[in-house]
Length: 274
Image (tube, rainbow, N blue to C red; front, side, top):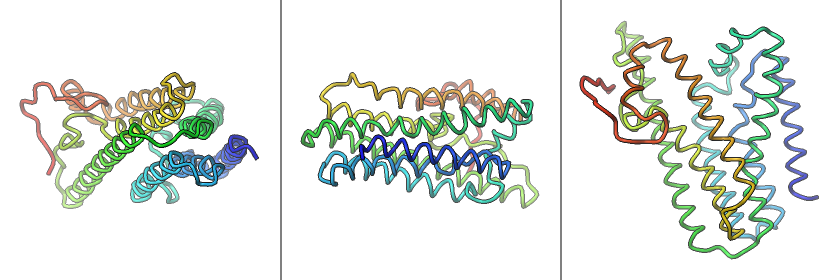
């Protein structure tokens, strides 16, 4: 069967399962729970359709698998797969919308849109399948850059994990944590470095397809473009919640780049966590 059709069947099945589970459980993070898993399946469908004989496709699949393993581990240790592990943003949004509106939002945005997006970001592998050209120096460069972004996201997530563990320990000891949100390490240069590295990795996947086709003008750019748009919207929404909880976050916003890491502006009086 045509590998793209196989992926469409996977997409349809995942949409149905995540939607039904959201209705049964009343939780709306089921797409979050398969976010790091389904793209890995898609790229291996394309690699497998070439009989695992295409070096570029095997490289893409291996890199995306590393991405998936890292993201799954980080999501799991934060309790994402446990009952009640729903993303706090969905509960905030649910409280702001009438029930019927949120159910439509759940079906069309959380379930359908996000699952379609997970397929779109992997379609450069389909481009590579259609253009089985030999692996070259640009592919190696893309692989190195992808791994550098993977390391960057790993470091950012670990710094965030360490901060929240310290914050929990301070609270348990009866002390008020200061600062109340992470501003040190990579978070000194970006308010969301993990968001930056996550998007950057999928832009590199797009470049693999462009290298295979011999042109940057590929329609599959829609995948990383929509992913970037999703992260921009998510950042605005997340920061509105954070700002409502921590008024001092406004100072952090003024001096720190939102996503792309850059040198901070005017750091006088900045307090950093251990």
